Image 1 (tube, rainbow, N blue to C red):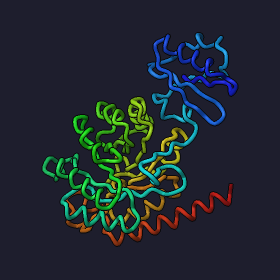
Image 2: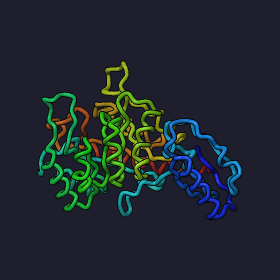
Image 3: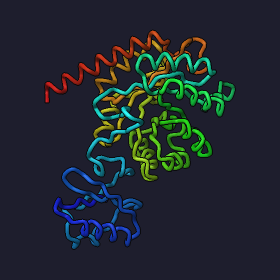
Image 4: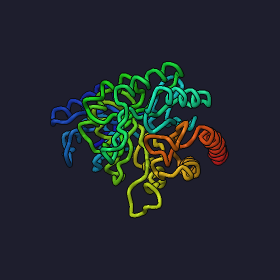
Length: 343
């Protein structure tokens, strides 16, 4: 339930509503806005009786929200959320198109220093690299784990880049958060609720990938687990879903990007590497995501793609990535000019 206060409501009116929500056993979440304050009711498992609020002063309207997610929805938060990773690095502000790049897995110190330095010189400020790697086969490379985190920390210190890396279980959250600027939840863990809760408690930006067969509602409900714990800076990442088609690794669902923006205030980025599994498709799909309304992309880049220990077939070499990055910037600026001229 969402209780919208009148613009003339006093602090006492707002406090009275909060006290009433707590008295009936729920948690109030105050959502300030430019024109009015709203108070969300959190903790209910179904319909909430609104009779205790009918006689309270200062209330403009009561909206019953039936979605399994509330804090994630535009009902509770009409304005777009901007995720601030660091000084000058914002995702979802509309002022820039975010590009996250780097290898699928941290393989060695030399590999990461090489790719980190090259990407930094191009102007990339967010470096991806998996220290912990969940793999379909137990015989595949599983990552360097703690050693990989140390390497990421060294590259971060030497280049000034910010780090995006995956956390796989609740026990690793504190350790990964000590290095990572954005905690990534992979597709396989989208509905690992214990992990989502622990990540939400870390109070760091989170990148939440869509599960391989997750509906939009399931995806947003997973994001709700994180927001309920107090972390509001969540970035959603569309990375393709599993369908009957086998010509590509997954089926890229670009239509979900503008659809998410209708339902939620959270920024959305696109992962063309995992969505297609083919390096020849990364560029066209990355460019298409710009026009679909994505706030950014995450692309797998490796200094020697064919020798990559993880996802070699979809990894891009440094020169090819440079060309893709330049094309993305040009298209983003073109789209902004069109948007401004038609407003």
